[in-house]
Length: 222
Image (tube, rainbow, N blue to C red; front, side, top):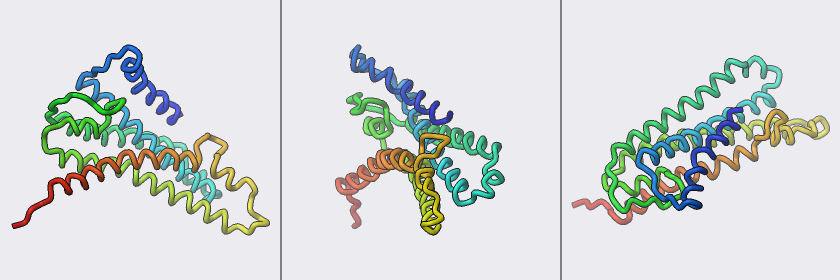
C-alpha cells in the first residue's frame, strides 16, 4: 500500500507539468510551484528508500529469525516503521527546501531538467551555496546511502544463512522466496535496482560539483 501510493504520487507530481511542457508548450513554472514540486518529489523518493530498507529488514527477520519473526516484527512495529519513514523523509526534505528558499536566484531563469530538482535549482543561484549543498549532501546520504547499505547487509545475512544449509536440506524455494517475496512484488532485485540509480543521482552530482569547484578555484596559501 505504501509503495503503491508512492508510485501514484510520483506520477501526479511530475507527469502533468511535463505534459503541459511537451504538448501545450507551457514552459514556465513559478518559484513556489518549482519548490513544491521538488519538495514532494524529494520526500517521496527518500520515503521509498527507507521503506525498501524496512522491507529488507523484514526479509532478514523472516528468513534468519523465523521462529521469533512474529515476536520481533509485530503489527504496531510495522506501523511505526512505515510512519517514521514518511515523517523523517518529509522533514529532512523540508530542511533542504527552507535552505533553497533563502537563496537568491539570478538569470538565466532556465532549468536544464524536465522537473525541478536540487542541482538545477542550485545552479540558478548567484550566492554561496556551500552550506546548502553540504546539508543537502548529508540529508541525501542519510536517506539513500544508509538504507542501501542496510539492504546489502540484510540480504547478505540472508544469503549467508541459506548457503550454510546443507544442499540436501536447503529449501528449493529459498532463493526464490528471497528475490520475489510472495506478499509483495519487491525483493532484493527491486531494492538494488531502485537504490543504485537513486543513490548515484543524489550523491554523484554534488561530489562532481565539489571536485570541479576545487579545480577551478583552488585555495591559495601564502
